[in-house]
Length: 109
Image 1: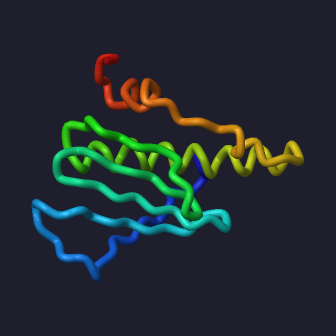
Image 2: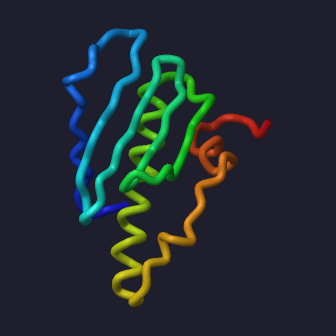
């Protein structure tokens, strides 16, 4: 994880209610990170316009956000490690559904 947490800002231009998608934006390490969550627990993490992770079965939007927030922090921390090694190993990084399920404590399907 990164040394300092990523500062997520909610998109206040979208309506807020218990039935709408929530959109969060952050800038970290020169990357634009975005998380979209739904009340039924589906969520997406995008970095610089590229989809990095998707969660379809979280118990709630908050749970999905926290898992994707951790993945984003790990992603940014990996960038720092790869800078020290002299290459961008993030390009080879893949987030598998099983990994996300394990973070949520959900069984494999």
